[in-house]
Length: 193
Image (cartoon, rainbow, N blue to C red; front, side, top):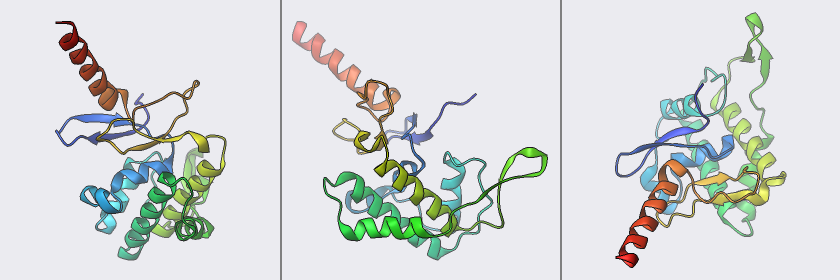
């Protein structure tokens, strides 16, 4: 059994697992506005399909994606990133999220053999609507107050803290949490010796 989350690569080339806890937050690792532009990976239809394949959306739908769907996904992602970071979200950003959520989403069906499948021939708009509805559920639900940004000074990954005590500080203990522990141990050795 594989653990939840996506495999990411740090700027130093180290791979680690990151589980943001929600489908909509998985989209935020694909780039974003301002300083996040340098991480942009959504350039072409195949890039959005590749993201869907890496996401927690299972089974992965066979998607028809156009350049317009990619542009809409980037607009949505940028608006969602600003919404989760803002103490009071901008009305225009909320409308981008809400407009996407109002569109028809992926429709699950029972496929041949009893396995979950998707109705029809899903497209990028339906994928985006599904992600947007996940964002609405997250940001209006019981864990809305637990959407956090990693505590590492050089990391801005966003996740929902579903831990029982609600004290998760790091995007990944394997990455930022471990780097913090190493720095703290070095500081203790320096102070003590």
